[in-house]
Amino acid sequence: MALTLRFMVAVSCLGAMGCAPVIDYSAPPGFVEAEADWQSQHYKGKDSLGLRVTVYDNVDGGTLDYWSNDLETKLQARGYALEGSSPLQAKNDVPGQRYDFRLEREGDEAMFLSVGLFVTDDYRYVTQLAGRQVEYAGVSSRVAELFQRLEPGGCKAGKTSVCR
Image (tube, rainbow, N blue to C red; front, side, top):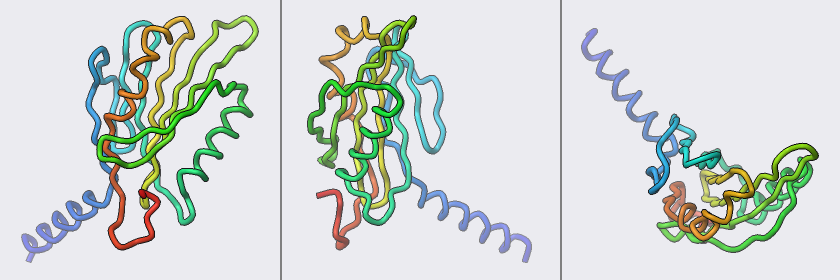
């Protein structure tokens, strides 16, 4: 009886783990993994460069356009200036959007923040590359490649999909 109960608990735990989002991303060349958990991974590059991949639950009505607008509005309210945006496509063909921001505060060194956003039926994946503005020139040509390495999960077959 006790063995059967333990087996059932173990199977339940494994089944629950299968429901959690999976971040399919590994440290790109020039970066090392600094921290990781079930929801995010953080990589450290040289100098002040940091790369983070985070996954959040999506909600009904949460499309790429919806979350893009939310992201732009929140970052601009915090003082980030949008310098450009362009479409992205993940490694597994999920469409996304890239945003490049600059942050300048009096008395501080200028910073950059590039964000890649991918939205599926179940999840939102946010990739962020940040550092000092003087380092951006050395990494700017790699930003799209760094973001497009991601393979977002959570597209549902048969559902009106935001994955397109």
